[in-house]
Length: 93
Image (cartoon, rainbow, N blue to C red; front, top):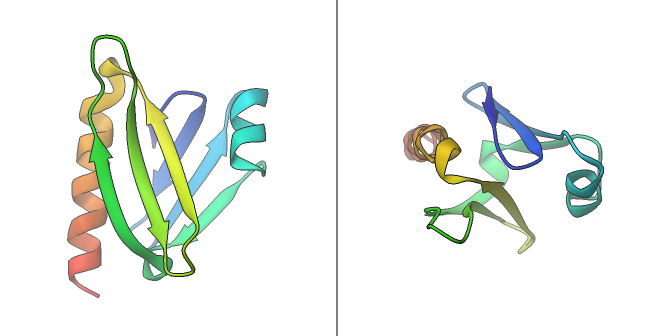
């Protein structure tokens, strides 16, 4: 389980589950629980957090939709590890 900015993220090797922990994050996600199968994700990218801006894990789905998972500098190592886990799991598909 990884905590981001207003979200909690869990990845079991095939399913990525994002749950908002704040009303603003729920509104941004558009749901109270976002479940994404690894096979539905076409592209991943990671943008690190800076001094004045948060970081972002971007997920582009095969249908063209996108999801952005925000994190701060303190959370960045956890999201970097999650990004590596997602890329490694995708490479085995």
